[in-house]
Length: 289
Image (cartoon, rainbow, N blue to C red):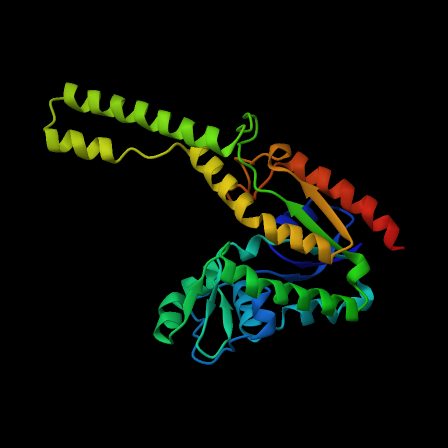
């Protein structure tokens, strides 16, 4: 099975556990907004990037050539996987209307400094401005896949972010997470304060230690996931109207893999989660033949 990906590690990690899959095209670090009015490479120095893959992805985003990478392989492809996770960091909008994805790699090249120098502003994911510009970009992506006769072979991986580590119970609601976080923070702050006082520290030191108490890892993951899933909702719903095939999972069906090779993140799932998605992809792909 020859696979192309327009998306993030969500699709890539799924393909990695598919012995049937050969990834022949992988387009990452791209917001679909770059497909409409790419900024171009002029004035952008990518020398800070040591990875050939990273340079290729950022250059493709700057040139707006991501879809072309997939389309040129159209005759050999069996499946195209899409996901929306790379939209999460927003994009830079320049005075001339061009855009650049605010990827970690672009930022590593001093992209934020360059963008602000040239009068660009960051359009943050989840805002109405971002959504309004994202829609025509996604439509353009779908149109190009249709023109290349790849639309019927396209599958949207519509996976919410996981709010709990593997083995932990999924939080019941955002409100529950907030209340639990407040209660936990208060409890830990009081414990730290008592310890600092017992150790004979000055009031200033006690206050400083109490103010430095941070949320737990589990609380942070849960808050991030609930916020992201709320922000993504209208994007996912709209994308689902534009594709014929989708594999969907709710947050409570997914768990974060604490041993994931790229680190624990709400969009880095357990092996069992990926296996479940793999089975549905294979079942869906049967209808393509």
